[in-house]
Amino acid sequence: MRRATEPRCPCGGTAYATCCGPWHRGDGEAPTPEALMRSRYAAFARGDVDYLVKTLHPDHADRADGDAALRSSLADTVRTLRYGGLRVLDARPAGPDGLAQVLFHARIHEGGADRSFVERSWFAHDGAGWRYLAGDLLPAPGAAPAALRIEAFERVLAGRSP
Ligand SMILES: [Zn+2]
Image 1 (cartoon, rainbow, N blue to C red):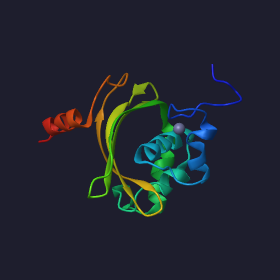
Image 2: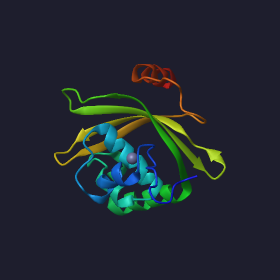
Image 3: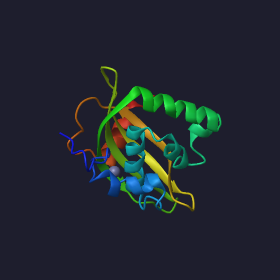
């Protein structure tokens, strides 16, 4: 049972107030790509569309149709999906191209359907903070894979390409 006084963060970290809460409130920026990714998962779980817009990189494809379309799409997503847990599997710090990677498993349900997936996310710093740039995603219903690394994930991705 959840303790009423100190709700746990949806990202699976410690108490929300000291985990992703500060970034959601605007008390600074998530300091690493992994922290940013965790805070975005928690924002999806909490329906915090403003934070999801703020932390989406200016070059992300979802911005192509404008701010209103982006907000509408995010509002639909947070209304229809249930966020059951997050497990970070692997991460790579930014290289010379400035791009950092985080591999994670997200437990997601839509009605009775298991929409859980594994995603390798790309992050870039825009001068203010880390921002979500793009993601490669594969369906992965059920529990998180025990030990999936980015190298192995890339091999699976390559095997699925036409
Ligand atoms: Zn958190």
